[in-house]
Picture 1 (cartoon, rainbow, N blue to C red):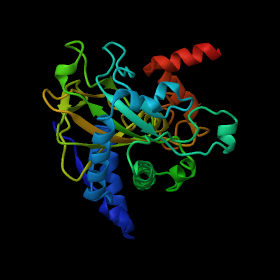
Picture 2 (cartoon, rainbow, N blue to C red; picture 1 turned 120 degrees about the horizontal axis):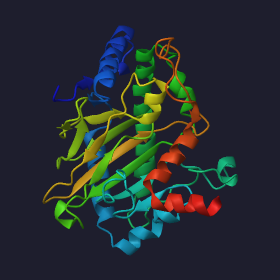
Picture 3 (tube, rainbow, N blue to C red; picture 1 turned 90 degrees about the vertical axis):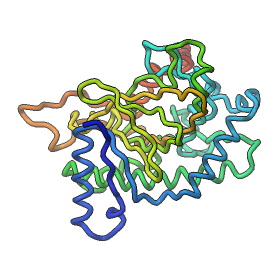
Picture 4 (cartoon, rainbow, N blue to C red; picture 1 turned 60 degrees about the vertical axis):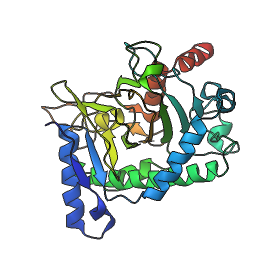
Length: 324
């Protein structure tokens, strides 16, 4: 296997239950063999992608001091702008050659979770310099939440659990929509600095739009790095650690990385689908038996996410140390 499967999910938007099952079987096979696949036939149109791409380029072109008005390291709930080298996905490599914008499920300052000071809960922090930014981003977040829900219902069907299993757990989620700018490789401070070091994603599923610059690579089962090139009109979908834990590794949370392109800028826009923070992540029925017992202890979404953030972000480790 040297190429990722491409799955047409348009049947999931019909009333044909047999067609739903056909898509679920394709997803099941892709998740078992790769943990990665492309989807086509989704409702996110080219006009929306063009708007987002324009806004991303305008935002990342702002002077650093303006982007740092919403510095993520000064956010108690991990929202806003992450400067180059803020993140280190591979602890054995230099910090990543990328800058980011992160947003999540918007909660007002009066929401009980915000008043209680819960981690990863709060209002989004949008740049004030770009007209229409907040409206576009909040609309897109909702649309990506719906698309992720459609895929998760198909995954529930594939796993033989209640179709609404994930719906119930994705109310007020901690899902993140992220914009990423990868500068050309020639701007790296070290020859071994990558756009994004090898890592697995933390949540349930990731839906990635990538531009035409390329650079995404996926690790195959035999350890080879396989290119996952951009394909017009598709999203790349991959399984994250929480889904691997839920499925007892029936579904793979596959390592992947980004090699910064040589002479061009790269922009990507992943949506990380992650449930409500109180959600228990434990082995699902049908994913274990006497010969295949649960591999992971039960945890919560919040506890797992915070542990992974501490591994990835120096500022999160320092904040945890100061409150310990």
